[in-house]
Amino acid sequence: MMQRTTSLFRRAAAMLLLAGCAAAHADDAAPANEVRVGAYFVQYSTKAHDLSGPFTPDGINLRVGNVTTTYLTYVRHLDDNWGLELAGGIPPTAKTYGKGPATVGSVPFNGQEVATAKWFAPSVLLDYKFLDASSPLRPYVGIGFNYTRFYKLDSTPAGDAANGGPTRVRLSSSIGPAGTVGASWQITREFNLIAAFSLARVNSNYRSDTSGVIRTTSVKFNPRTEIVALGYSF
Image (tube, rainbow, N blue to C red; front, side, top):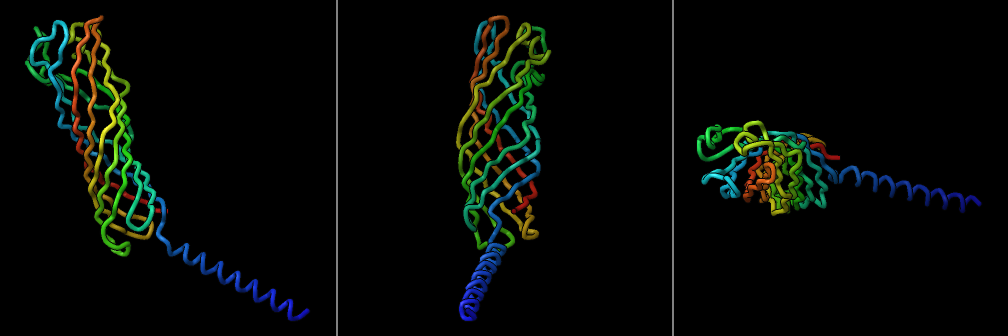
């Protein structure tokens, strides 16, 4: 009986020892998840064909103003080097300005705010971090795709005047390639600083309707994004 009790005690001790080793290993392992919060500085290099449609003068074009919004991202670390990133931000309001002649008829046009829109634009990226996990500074690159959906599009009073009346505006959604390059600086086991630069191809078809008068163009937004963020790993 004593031998059986001793044997059971040894087995239990061995199991506790193995469990303790496993827990210690788990504690030493790098966190698998990371959330990032920061600032998104979006600059557009807009290229668009001149608007076409009835009663549309030559040279009527558009440009989009730069925006800044809150950057929100989740990263799933697959191992010490690879990670899957879902990047995005709080949808900002982008302002569209007239580009072309100073006036349309007698109505001011060039440089006037003619429309506003919100956009929802998440990107999914596969990231690769360089250097060893023990290095506090780790450059990385990522490649993937971006989805952009425009909503709450409104023509401004200046836009209505240039178009000849109340106008409804539409932009089609876009799916295109995206990429990023950046670096993370580990402050503690949980916290790190991130600085990155991202590009995405966002192409959309523009359509306005002014009492049945349809005007269209295609727009390449060419967003270039600078990111500064704080990351928390868990």
